[in-house]
Image (cartoon, rainbow, N blue to C red; front, side, top):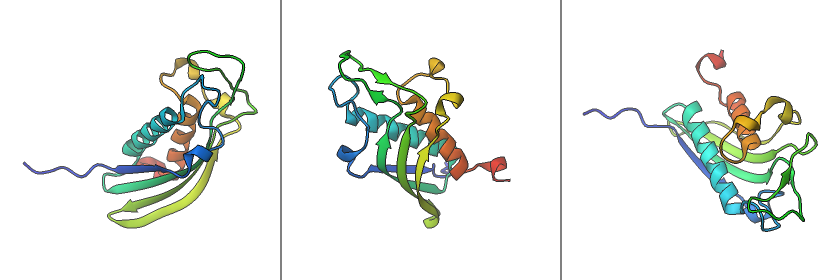
Length: 152
């Protein structure tokens, strides 16, 4: 039996996550940092697998996270309360290296954000956490790593 092409590989690392601007609920009522990082890793790996070619490897180092909205202290609930307004967009700073066949074909550092995130997103029909961040990263992947017809 012949082996098919290798799947795209995505590796995600976090640089000093304990210093991130806002990646966890610091009032002990929302999702902890490890849950945020696990979900963000899953999002990045899933996006990479759908957007990258089988012979590509993407290494991402997340340098800072500022989730959409802000924690609202004083409201204790099992899931925490996060207030999201148009003045509190998500922001993720990351560095990346894309390799194809072992050769570097793209690299850089980006601050991914969208001040219009509330106009282009509708979390009412979403499942899972980090909805705004997922949409932000989906758009970044589409711009940074276009596929097929998108490449023109």
